[in-house]
Amino acid sequence: MDHPRVSVCTRTWCRDASLKMTIGSFLAQSFEDFELLVADDSSPNDTALTVGLCSFGPRLRHLRLLQTLGPAGNWNRGITEACGKYIKAPRRDDLIAVVDLKRQVTVFDAPPDVLPIFSSRNLIGKSNPPLSVKGRLWEEGHVATNASRRRRICSGTKLP
Image (cartoon, rainbow, N blue to C red; front, side, top):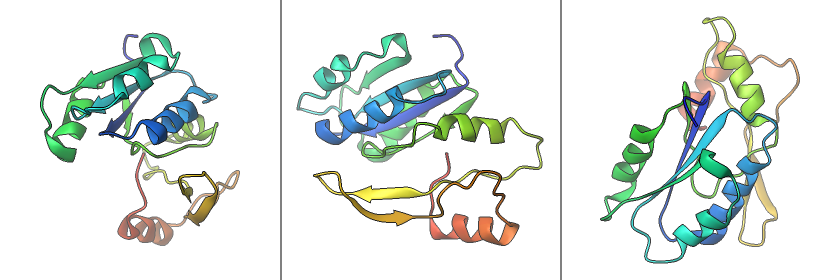
């Protein structure tokens, strides 16, 4: 795939089950102009098999490091390989709503006076029930105030 709109770069090390759910949440996106890069920090398990079983065509790339570099080195590898105009960097266990990429790209493509985009997130356990919700749920037409944006940046809510 040449120059997708968005490069989704996730990193992993020995997290097959959660990685499979993360990949699945991107497979379900209503927005399709993106690539999904899985930066694998030399996992000794079946990460390559997990990625290989996900039918996503050339938009899914498994970037296996030859030696373990740790989280920062693994992130850097994924971002270096990214071809998209925008980069989204979810963790290996993040799930996103079906419309998230579409909504986020729409806002990023808006006039340049728009600030970073945030969305709520559900924290889940191994059996997948929501443990808690962080941030505000997406409201159609909702535009946060500058104070709200600053508060979200300071509280560590992830940027896309």
